[in-house]
Length: 118
Image (tube, rainbow, N blue to C red):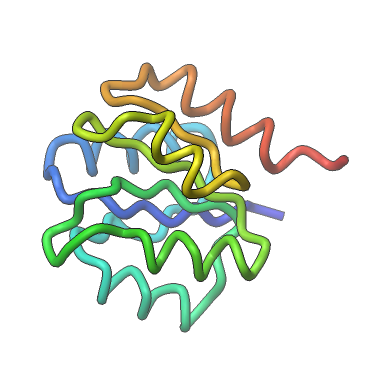
């Protein structure tokens, strides 16, 4: 089974780098979505196995989307360069927080870890 990763990232180059990284690793990628509304719609159509969310999207912070996915037991990886990862980790203790820029190998290792059977 191929795992689906939702990518919500408003920075064009970073978004396509993320998508390329995950596609090359064999994942199915949904996105990139620059805004919350398109990412939410994609989640309604098909729940992802993992979500990579930039905190700042073009139509606001991704907090509501992150919480919705966490409530549905979807592993969420939040990343941003403008927010303190400790503050984000406190707000979303069930999510993983990564600072940007994040090396592709670290992103892939993090995704592998969150989808590994317990």
